Each structure stands twice: as C-alpha cells, then as structure tokens.
Amino acid sequence: MSVNKVILVGRLGKDPETRYTPSGQGVCNFSLATDETFKDRNGERQKRTEWHRIVLWGKLAEISQQYLKKGMLVYIEGRIQSHSWDDKTTGQKRYATDIVANVMRMLTSRAESSGMSHSAAAAASGSADSEFNQGGGDDTASSAPGPDISDEDIPF
Image (cartoon, rainbow, N blue to C red; front, side):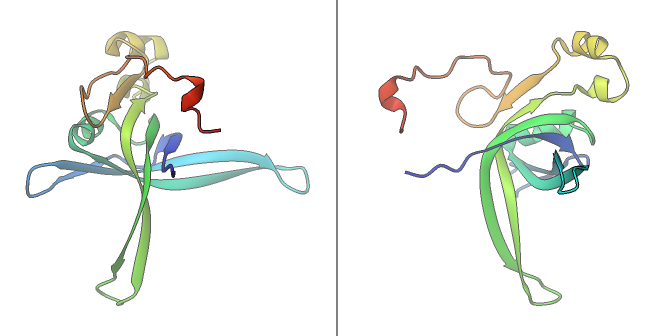
C-alpha cells in the first residue's frame, strides 16, 4: 500500500493563471508559500519559506481563477506529481514537482483581501471560508460527513 497525499495551508504568491486544453478543460496554476519559524543554534528566531507549484483542473481551475488573488490564504489538498522535460534552449533535462489539488478551501475571502473587515467579508460572502472539491459529485461547498470508519479500517 502507498499514499500520495499533501495538505498545505499558505498564501498565493501570484494571481492564478488559467489556460485551456484543446478539449476545453481548464488548468490553473499558481505558487503557494508556506513558512515555518524556528530557533537557530544561537537561539534567534528564523523564518523559512517553501514555495509550491499548485495545479488545479476543470471546474476547480475555473473557480480558483475567479475567486483567488495574490496574498490570499488557502487550504490545498492533493497529491505530488513530478515531471521532466528537455530544455529547448540548453538541451538540459529539467525537473519540476507540482501539487495537483483536488480540494481547495479559501480561508481569506476576496473582499477581506481587499481590505474589508473579517465580519464584513463573511457577511458579503455568506461565510468566512468556502471549500471546493474536484472529482465525482458536486464541485460546490462540501459539508457532507466522510465515510464511517471502524477500527478494522485503520492500517496500524
């Protein structure tokens, strides 16, 4: 058995960019920054930022393009996918690792990111956060409980 699952909470480093495949399916890309703080050997606080390449497909891509903006805080759930290609100018092999998301949850509303207060933004959008899922079923806000899990389902 193997698992390929990633959960990230971070801020968009740029506005999403959406393109469409020849068949008309949307694909959205943006960078996401996550950071951690720690104390170094001298006891001084340090901050380290990791940048992640996020890819969303289909309806999730269209929703992300419409609602997400640089600086917004989002929850991303998905899988790691690596790929390589030959650079056309140098001929060198290039590598990239993407997070292909199937769940995106906005933790900052667009109105809030534009300077409105949290309560005004929540009132404008109906709630302070919205979750969108990719895959089978409805692509809108999801609040349905997960499947029942018994002790026999836990792998350890």
